[in-house]
Image (cartoon, rainbow, N blue to C red; front, side, top):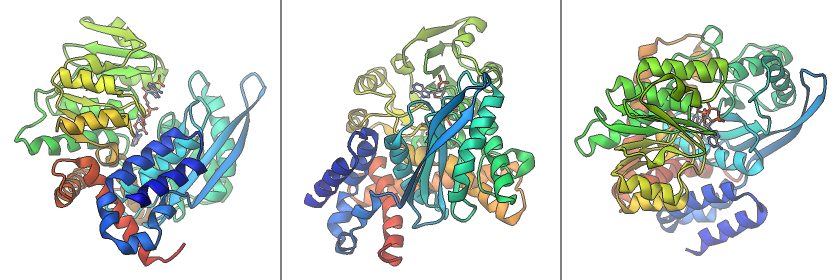
Length: 446
Ligand code: NDP
């Protein structure tokens, strides 16, 4: 349809050299084609043209002083993409690869993901090209304080509520929150992923990984199967990966791999709770490399410079970063009998890999549905902060389970309604889009 091509052309021209943003927009726009075809009101209101343009985008200098007394300068970003459904919500990423195109793709995905959760949240994302790796705690603190000194004027509990993402975990959220509180003179739920004793929610650290496994369980139910006994490959060794592995162990599945940007470990005997505790201490406390795992546990091996997609498995859980499953990786997974992919990372499969998964009709849970548990639980943290009342672990976990199950059902039913049964990419994109588009129609030209 001409309109979609026209809009993609505008995006290409207005955002040159931002391939990730174009990739995310192309996937969504192409899959919502049937809605656009059916809906003149959406076309006349130029919803697509407005959706692809951030409501606001902030870029700022982040100067800080390292342990040697030298001045360092990084670049900070916050993209406030769409507030039709609520305050902007989405994480902050600290990684050397961060630039406008990465933050815009993540913010764009976030709009539809947040819509799918059913909670009142708009979409945003932010971050910096700062690399926390190899930095001391004091350096990370000084960086976070400088970053927040600019960001604080653009956010607030009813305006924009950031959270963590790659390179931003509990430590960073603590420093960011401390500086916000100092500048705003207000103790308020302006960030999620906070420490438990100062406004955080139980299950928030676990939520992305647990949610991706709950989503996989929903997909398996359609084939009258459970995750028990399934051999699962997992990439990454950070927040999303650790809690994906933890939930897989709890469900009696067999996770056999984890990775970081240097390589992956393969443990044919399965990663156990004890082994996972070791990974958590390497990654969260000592901030070391996953290769240490293979030195510690017999029967496991470390493969440098590669990803784990050549390992024979039933299910794959990409939990590291975007475009980490290439078409070649997808072929290897399929040839080895993998028939479920649940994306805990954002956009981890390249478009050609997604096409292969859909063509072979495996159970494929796209990131914006399968990893929505993280932001959904952030939404629950916001509710608890507003009420000033923390919920017990069981309550948050049960709400998370319900939300994942609703997201699955909504995406599954929508795919069927639009004549593409089983295609959760189409289902999630359309279901997420329709709610945002309706809200934008109600709110006029803003
Ligand atoms: P972490 O920083 O905790 O962990 C990231 C992991 O991925 C690390 O093991 C890291 O290895 C690896 N990694 C990062 N970049 C690359 C790269 N370019 N190539 C290979 N490996 C890489 O981040 P999270 O676990 O929070 O995030 C992982 C993914 O999950 C991201 O796509 C994120 O957007 C997504 N996500 C996270 C949510 C959350 O709540 N945290 C919510 C929804 C999605 P190394 O240590 O070597 O850098």
